[in-house]
Image (cartoon, rainbow, N blue to C red; front, side, top):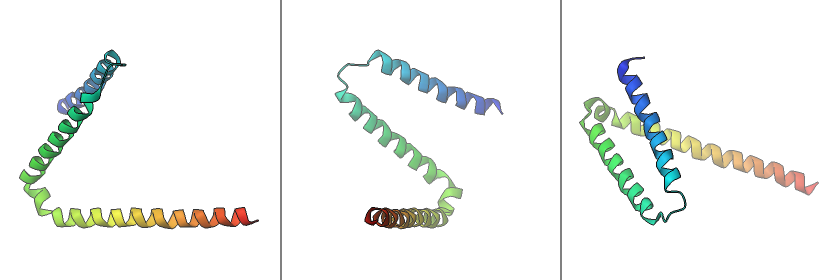
Length: 98
């Protein structure tokens, strides 16, 4: 493991622990504004991710392939869920008729 990877792992663990400590401290208080702050942070992270992806020529060149793979995975997941839900429904229907 390189020094850079170790620093990233430590930053992630440090962020998690910091969040746990802050959460423990503010537990029980009015947290109405925290939802808005989280939403803003998520949108900011998505924007930064888009900028990073948009500046990476390799990723941009492979977007059609990545999009097709994402579509196939999505269709497969939905189809599998529908099929296995139908099978389970049939099995449970037969069991209840007996």
